[in-house]
Image 1 (tube, one colour):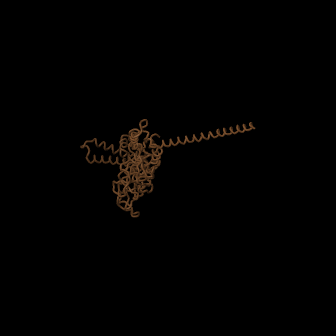
Image 2 (cartoon, one colour; image 1 turned 45 degrees about the vertical axis):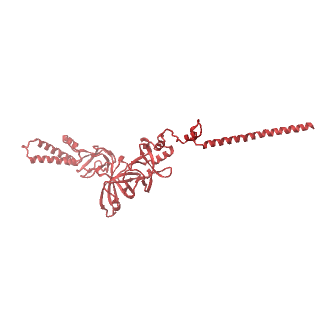
Image 3 (cartoon, helix red, strand yellow; image 1 turned 120 degrees about the horizontal axis):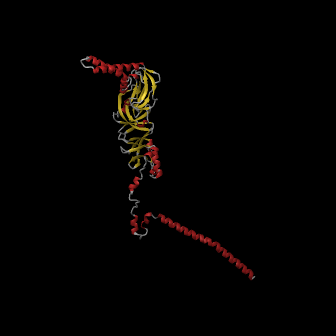
Length: 418
């Protein structure tokens, strides 16, 4: 019996030992969790303490630490000026070209979105020349194609024919007679005979010039009569070949235009305006011409001062520069007339973007780079915007502003590192 009791006691002790062994990890886990929670609370409290509080680390804390914490931290001594400079995006000329960024200078002229007139681009008549020999000619050879850009003095056509040969022969004879008479003394020839010889030579020379022969060609013809019967029609100005009607072997009657040369670096704009719109128009003032997505300043050079009997509109004429020949005669355009009452400047949609706060902004270029400036959009019509808040004379981005806005938001003002 004692043996059985000892076994039960032994079993009971083993079971208590096992319970204690099993319970030990649970006590350990609870302790670990408590320590972890305390450590986490310590970290949270440390994170909540401002970084300025550690400015006096390694010294006595207290009043001295408080005074140190009140001193603003400066990374390199620049302060607010450094932050302001960082807002300017810097781009090289190559980067600007690749991004399609175009910049224009704002003028003091003020335009209205309501005072708009339809317009048409035409050639600048002061820079356009029609080639129409005043003699019957035959086209012997062609040296250009329609639309080709030529320089002054380049050969365009080789012309000839019976009338050409006769005119050249008459000049050679008249020039030779005048040269002979000039060498004779006044006693040997009368004044009337001298005058007649001179007038005849000049008349025959004028006929060759009417055929569009140059002075150099005429002088060469006089010294070398063997070239009678043909000549090269040379470009009188630099320009583009237009309205080319000449065909090989064709006989062109006197006064018929063979082709036209136009300098497209300048164009004219013809527009029809109402009497109300013409009230603010004065010759010499500026207007804004919009062709497609391009906005170009133009100068008013004339107005008809007469209303069309059918349309009841007045025609005005403007001149604009066209560097690179990006626009062409015959294109339609919109004309924004000056209006000093409404106030503001006109910018295309491509110049406007939304800032981080949702307000409208444009990009101004200065010596530091491109900087975003908030503006007020007063009115929007047909892809154009009446904008206020910009200083006249500023260089504003009119194309590629979306690229600058995206880089500003994406790179944190480090666009020059891309």
